[in-house]
Length: 321
Image 1: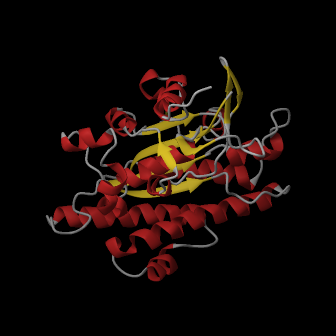
Image 2: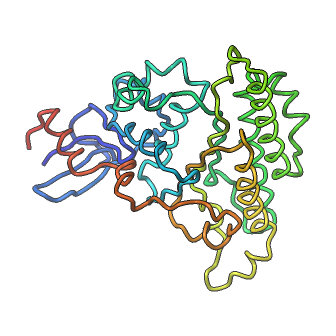
Image 3: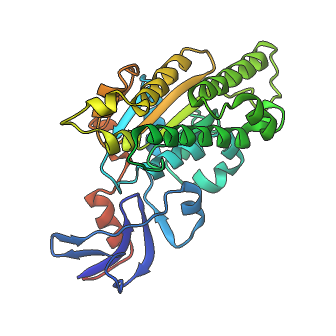
């Protein structure tokens, strides 16, 4: 029997041998996979900077996604499949705040060939990210809506903290002037309009020295988009959900995203992960522009490990059964 600690999110530890609890080892007996490990590390930067992990390179898909004409992509996989790590990889490549870290994070990876070949450029977006699996749960649907609104506000505040120096002013000033704690959707709309106005002004005056001169707009990353609605939707009795503030907020969120994609420098691209397409198809019908790429061959391997990945890791480490 062979034991190697490997993570389906796309990484493996270099520590060999059995795990005492039997939770962190990949166990293969003959052609049978007896156990698969779990790991909570989903931050691309932390992963790349930690020598106890080896990264299964998925960066070539950054160029593939960039070449797809659809501006909003839906990508579905089961839980524990590495979706969050994929979003973190995209954030660290595309986010202007990570531009100076490019060599440290990407220099020896597949995407570097395309960067050197001028096929794609890192650091051309402001990243706005949401994780709807982080919403506090409650049995009361209207209380749940309040939790979702708080989650949206938190993401907007995080955006201002990261990008205030690029947009001008302090993070506190931007938040106090543009975030309404009682209206998450209005606050989202204002944030995108601020970015669109700032980029329009910079490009109109031809200010090539401004740090945002080459920025195209906002790249929206949404993790577990259906985690919140799946918690409360009852397929046998949809009426409570349909009539709730929570359902209205979800619909308003996606309708606003769609509207903000019409701006010249607003939301330029979306990458959305989840488990099922049903929530986007049924309850957010205002957002009918997303293309489900989950089963398209060109991006199928962006998450998780293939058999070849596992066999290659075992071979490289010269593990003998």
